[in-house]
Structures are given as C-alpha cells and as structure tokens.
Image 1: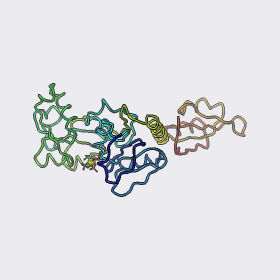
Image 2: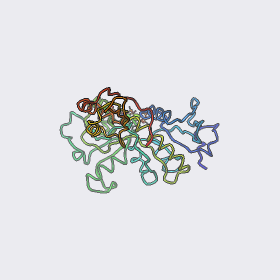
Image 3: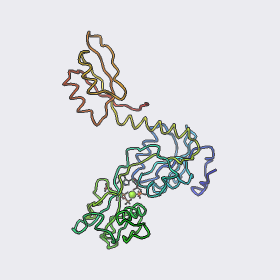
Image 4: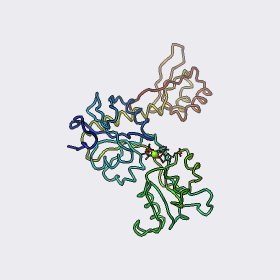
Length: 306
Ligand SMILES: Nc1ncnc2c1ncn2[C@@H]1O[C@H](COP(=O)(O)OP(=O)(O)OP(=O)(O)O)[C@@H](O)[C@H]1O
Ligand SMILES: O=P(O)(O)OC[C@H]1O[C@H](OP(=O)(O)OP(=O)(O)O)[C@H](O)[C@@H]1O
Ligand SMILES: [Mg+2]
C-alpha cells in the first residue's frame, strides 16, 4: 500500500482508492478543477487538506506541486496525475510514466532567453561556455551538451538552478541568459529579455504509472476526458439544403464520421446535422451558405463520446 502519511495528520483511508495527483496551485490549477468538474468527479476539499476523497468514484485526489507530480507518478506513489510535459521531461520520468493524453491547456514554450541589450547573443551557440540560470537544469544541460557535442559532465556551459522568478537572474548579474517558460512573453519582455531558442513545446498531460493499480478506472477517466476535449473542439452545425446540393454541402463539412441527414416536410429538401471543428467553423458556414444551405444554426456540445 502506498504511504502518503506525510500529507496530513488525520488522513482519510485511501487504501482502496486510485490516487489521482492534481496541481495544488499555479497555472494549471483552475483548468484542472474545471476538467474534474466536467468529467463528473465530485469531492469536498477541506481547507489546508491536500487529500480529498471523491464521493462518486473510488478515487482520492492528491493536491501536489505541479513540479513534483511526474516524480510521484513515476515512483508509483500516485496512480494518475496531471502535469506539464516540461515537468515530465525534466523529471526524467518518461521510462516509468505513460502519457495517456495531451490536455490542450498549459500551452507554452521552454525557451532560451538573453538580454535584448546584448546584441552578441543571438542563438544558443553564442552561450556556450557562459552562465545559464533555470528551474529546468536537466533539460537545459541536455540542450547545451547536445549543442557542444559532448556528454553533460564534459560541457563548458554552466547551468545553475533557481526555483522561481528566473527572469530576474540576468538583471541581477547571476546569469548571461536563462531558460524558462514563455507563454505571452510579457514576463520575458518586462525583464528586458528576448527568446533566442526553443528547448521544448509543452502542454499539460494526463499521465499514469506504467504498472499503476486500477487500470480500468484510469481508462474510464481517460475516456471521460477525451469526451470533454472533443466537445470543446467541435460544435454541432445544423442546416437545411436542397437534396440535389447535399453532396456539395457534405464535401464542405463532412463531420467526424458522417453527417446525419433527415428529410424535411418540404419536398426535395433535407435537414443536415454535422460536427464541425470550431477552428474551421466560420469558413465552413460561409461555404455552406454559398452552396445554398439555409437556416444554418450552431449549437454548443456539452459532452461527447466517440
Ligand atoms: N505562463 C504559463 N502559461 C502556460 N502554462 C504555464 C505557464 N507557466 C507554467 N505553465 C505550465 O504549468 C506548469 C506549472 O507551472 P506553475 O507556474 O503553475 O508552477 P509553480 O511555478 O510551481 O507555481 P507558482 O507559479 O504558483 O509558484 C509548468 O510546468 C508548465 O507546464
Ligand atoms: O510569457 P508569460 O505569459 O509572461 O508567462 C511566463 C511566466 O509564467 C510562469 O511564471 P509564473 O507566473 O508561474 O511565476 P513563477 O515564476 O513564480 O513560477 C513562467 O515561469 C514565466 O515566468
Ligand atoms: Mg510558476
């Protein structure tokens, strides 16, 4: 049985439950809570408690720092978890951790950033032998060792760890450049830095230990998450069209599997219902209208299953 007694004095009994690790704060927290609600996970988390029993499934949620979750999953201390791909790679947990699915939020880039004012630093190669500060020492060392064409132990670039506010390091004279996460770029620019290379594109990932307990329950969670992600990506588009133009219309919006076509009470006309990717919706509606579709309606999808 997993020992998680370090997480609180009066622990609930979690022995018969799948342990599901979720970031306890930070950039992924709100999205994770939204996802848990959407997949029907109900729980009541008491203030200051890092474990919450799920009332409608044999699951205990364990709220942990995002940066630690990959290591807990890799060691089998928890069965399932949500964290960033950057953290999985940095924790060197790939061998023991199976990626169940990418979740499409927490998207950002791990980038090499140098002072804008220093025109001599234009790519990672210009930093060989210099001082780099980061929270991602393993990924950064691998990046520069590869660039230098040597093993990590032999490389001349110096990589030092700081746990946060990495962008301050250059201004404080601690580093010539940094490696940190960039989303909008606001933090980077505010510190007078610009990106000169990308180490990794990252997003949040649902992961499990390769030998985890409760594989059936993990599969259920995965299917539920898939349903929510599909629902978020698509809308349902309905329209009427003359039957002799149906083929053209179906070519414009072929749907996930195929459009549903039902006869209208009006002779020679049909009603069509089809899933359309949100990213292509406006173009598809223009083309459908052009092809003679009328009464084109768009409906949100709350949930979906393949
Ligand atoms: N600006 C961002 N945009 C999108 N995703 C991000 C951003 N910053 C971090 N992430 C993602 O979220 C993960 C956790 O980072 P986060 O900043 O939430 O943790 P933290 O630094 O421990 O928390 P905090 O910033 O509250 O101290 C990162 O590893 C990355 O995958
Ligand atoms: O490109 P941006 O949109 O500005 O986002 C990037 C910033 O977000 C994260 O920091 P966070 O806000 O989590 O603070 P932290 O450094 O204390 O972790 C990351 O470490 C960057 O500093
Ligand atoms: Mg942070």
